[in-house]
Image (cartoon, rainbow over all chains, first blue to last red; front, side):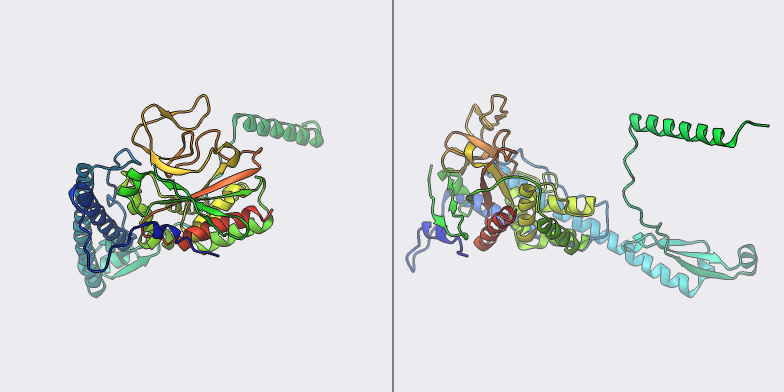
Length: 196
Length: 224
């Protein structure tokens, strides 16, 4: 298989020792595009690092593309992306701080459950996947509550996986099913004979 | 408008570089359009292709979808989307759209040999490929900015294209908006006997991936 490198030859080569200096708006646009690419890369890394946390806002409004954006539009896009990155990082920092507090709370709950009666911390609170939670509950229900027998229960909590639900039956299918049931019922009654 | 067309070897199918309008090329010097035309008919995918899609589905996992935007090629297309004013989180890049569909539907579903060929190429290389009815293409394909009062395709009911949009066009007019499917009347139909495959190469996408995407498409289309 040959490699499509033929178009590279179309670009003029600068002589050794010469510096190509771009002036005007085009150079500014090129620079802005490079900045946008860098911010997009950082957003990608932050997005992957943020998983499985949900509820973070990642979107940056489109600009009625695809088209060649002007200098002002590229500047606005760069600023919007930078603001989005800053915002997401701030949110993530606050969340991770809260998650760390929750982890410490779980440790304290484990060490002294009686001091944290009925406290419940979910996996989501510590930035993990799943529906499990740590819950301080009494042993043996009311008896344990009165005797002060408290412990931390870790529940997996997730319901069983279920696939996509089947599509709702159409009106015709409903009628067909009810007619079939009627026929079956009538058949059963006839087989059973007359009521005594 | 600058034209460039060179034939490249791709088994027995030649690929050629389409033209890129001078104004567009000045802004995006690494933007390329590469085409390949071959005799192929649409229809049901053979078992081998269905099996290949199942294999791709099995290898593709949720974690891959999350980390995808860090990978060089999906990232390159995301960046280009940003550069041309698209939001890749709203108008997903083709490979991300395929990934989301895989997660929602539980697998890459087989539709027909043409769609399957494009999907296999996209998932394996990250490079999107589109197919046109070759008999509806006039001259070489290229990328340019849409002018005033232009329509998308040559059907009587063709929709107008807003001026300034980046489009894939032949000698007679736009046949697709960049990164969108073909205009009505230009896509592959049951009567198609020759297809023109085209792909868009953006900055930071190696040429070998583009070549591989087209090669994969041709291979799948020829497997019937």
